[in-house]
Amino acid sequence: MSSRQSLNSWKKLEILAEEKQSQHMNDLFANDSQRFDKFSIELPKLLLDYSKNLIDSDVMTALFALADECEVTQWRKKMFAGDKINKTEDRAVLHTALRRSDTTPLWVDGENISESVASQLTKMEDFVNRVRQGHWLGYSGKRITDIVNIGVGGSNLGPQMVTEALKHYSDNSVNVHYVSNVDGAQIVEILRPLDPEKVLFIVSSKTFTTTETMTNAKTAINWLTASSFDDKSVAKHFVAVTANKENAMSFGIEADNIFDMWDWVGGRFSLWSAIGLAIALDLGFDKFKDLLAGANEMDQHFADAPIEQNMPAIMALLSVWNTTFLGAKSQAILPYDQTLHMLAAYLQQAEMESNGKSVSWDGDEINYATVPSIWGELGINGQHAFYQLIHQGTDIIPCEFMIAAQGHEPDLAHHHRLLVANCLAQSEALMRGRTKAEALSLLAESGFAMEELERQAEHRVFPGNRPSVTLIYPQLTPYVLGQIIALYEHRVFVEGVILGINSFDQWGVELGKELAKSLEPMVDGSKGCDGKDGSTASLIAFVLEQRH
Ligand code: F6P
Image (cartoon, rainbow, N blue to C red):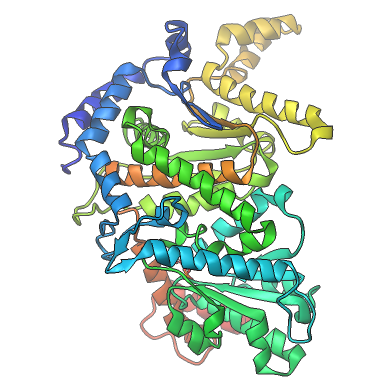
């Protein structure tokens, strides 16, 4: 038994989970007119309703006791103070320092990182203004019209998700594109319509060793120099964001064109640094700062609010309750906001690369469920695709609904009303369900009778009692988006603490990377497949045969 499972609160929650399985949320609502007030939390510009979960005051008390026994507040303090809580990499975890309003010194390994952050923000602002105002010119003297960000994982998902989410706030001074896939089909399609004389590339890579990013960056350099016939043009068209300045310089990036990243920022938490340069180029620096300010507001709340009134902590505890204690295997992210179409992909990395682990921070095997599979889709599109399973499938899938009170198209307010109505209808339907008696009476009204009535009714029954949370905000502004992303970042952290996991390393991605390196010469036929298993060797043989 792990140390977590021997906690009193853990044992209590196991008992409560047994008990609650036989309760229905409809009864919990019917018996408590204050339920919404008890199980919702409002912050400036954000309302989280978590009343549609299989919880009551006993469950919440036990969950708060679990947070207490797991020392969440102590860990929170350590994170904000820059303690090296990422033990396997011996690193501090300070993405919050990237958006601090407070300028008091914060020391990591003898460096005042407040100063380093401020100096990079100044460098970013200057660069962003020069590009957007047409003072940064390409090799032939033309102004930059297109930005291509080359990066993958945390060096792509955050910036691209935010760029998409805030497209209403772009003034189109430049067009921003993202290349993440090493499949040449992506970079070819993106570069095809562009004019090399007017393109600026950002090579975003914390390590500057990621093969896919390096390969795409090389292809981009070749594309540029095939037009300029001059290697010096690289200085006018390439900047890099990295914690590995040496590698970036040996790759051919000018020292002045390199923006700093630091090892105390995890890739998947890095969009607030110069990794977010493409966002700032698209929106302008003031709006980028609004994004940081929104995140900083959430940081303040997370740092100061007691756990019982702490939005990220409550979301984390609910996730653990639904997954670890009630047995949910996945969780659906369902934004009813077109521009959040990349949110689920972004949160897949945030949640699953952070907490998709089965070894505790002490190196012990974990024998309870940790993070569920995260997946999702825009609400309305999902309704006409997979919601069938969410409502009537055999698995219980906790859902996270998100919606703005107001959209960005004032002339289409009736569209937005429909969107809101659908979003709210789904969480209501998931919770209340439809009984057999209700199904029978509806069918009887529409003319069914006898055996056919009975047979058809079974298919129209909805069990209900399916958990969801709903997050509502006035409008998806840069500030609000900053709040929402930071909310999820802190939720990931609290989940990790409760589950006894180091959320900030990602060793699980390494083996595949190593094997891909060793397979490459086999795939190009320059090395035999000796030592490979029969399956892998035969797949390679088939590829080689087809290619010839
Ligand atoms: O392979 C996983 C990963 O290391 C992520 O954690 C990271 O965000 C991504 O690769 C990209 O890494 P880098 O920014 O160093 O290129």
